[in-house]
Length: 153
Image (cartoon, rainbow, N blue to C red; front, side, top):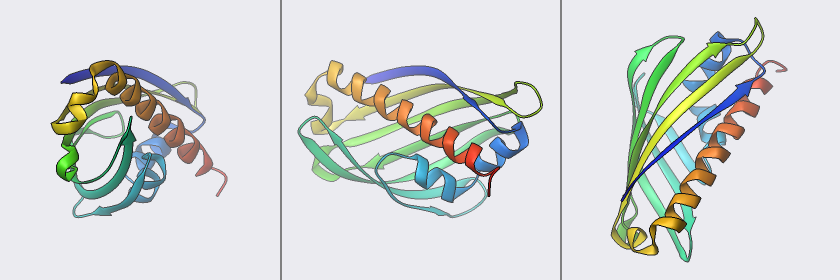
């Protein structure tokens, strides 16, 4: 089952700072809902452990995250795949673009695709779709707060 989610988030930080935050494992770890660990293997590869609850199923996903199509500081594609044991798998990615909105703000646009299989896929497309949209929204809202908060620190 595949889903497509699009949205945007206005972040109170210049493009260069938002780009740096998009590439900072500590910022991403805080922004990803349910993220237990996120470790950088290289400039474009990370490993992650994320605990998610989708309907009645709670699963721990262990996976890989790769950054592709890098066009600093304007855009990239983030791709991830996680295995949740008997719960199934989740994989997906997002094309992320950054556009200046004046000197001190950035509009982050995303087009995300997600695919799930296994027990999770049996929960029904409506539940998976609403959960995926909620998680995407949470991630980008959390990320916006983190990227903007970097300015104060």
